[in-house]
Length: 406
Image (cartoon, rainbow, N blue to C red; front, side):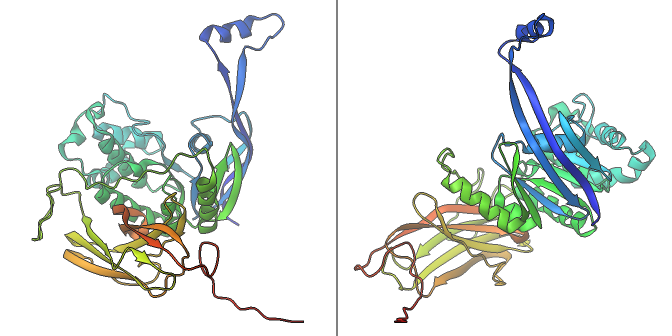
């Protein structure tokens, strides 16, 4: 195996003091009295990454994900354990990290290139592609202290993915920026992955990990809880998150993006050019069903680009407590849907509804890039109730038979 990152039993701990004076008291105390509490951010992490892997790193806030990435990049030193890296790293850990706020965007491109080991002459060859990718207009010649978080993200991504790294590390940076830029970043990351670049990818959007990464690592309380195939690890992680009573209920924005013209009966382009498409209407054939009846959901959506490559539509059934029941999408099932400028309608049909009694809701989402980039998502777009005469128990009816053997 061609291992590019080898992490062995990494521990990172911090001394926490109630007040600054306690640090001084501890340093001079004649009997070495402790005035601190120890916080262990990482507790024995062992991990190996092979060249060309795309690794998704999962975990709730405070689990140790960012600490691990900072140790890999050399920003932090482990308390104990070893890290071996065989290649050049390009990392986006925090927006603006490594930028001098007084320098212009262009000056910071050279600065970041220098920090990654490139000469000014080498960066001269790359600067046009970086500026073109960042696409922040005349702000490239302005001090970065004037930049919005979105501009920071654009410039950080542009530098990091145009310097031909052996290892690219992305920590939640895709959460910032508009849909169009997210699409551009994912496309570029796919190119890098195809060319053999190793990618470590942190995202709270676990579906992005499932669809983009071939492997995943779940970090829980500073330890590796599970690692392996990305789809399997995401399922384990999501199951944990759903059933952990300490986790607050998930919130998904269900409002139309700001600065969008309200749609009337005629097709109208949105005022905001970053809005690529919208789900404009969702209808269900009825709201009260019996088990095994047919469900037909009509989904209307609008596309505001000449064409959106890799467009997909997803529909997901949830309980009122947001327990995930079923969520197919057109990409996984190899169904082509209209992806050109205009208004379109698609029916999502369940010929025989297998669910037993209860109330359920249906989310609908419009995505591209195999479901990695969210174009528009409607939570609880429609809801329905299932009632039956008593004939079985549980959540779903599974076809079966009984065989008497004796």
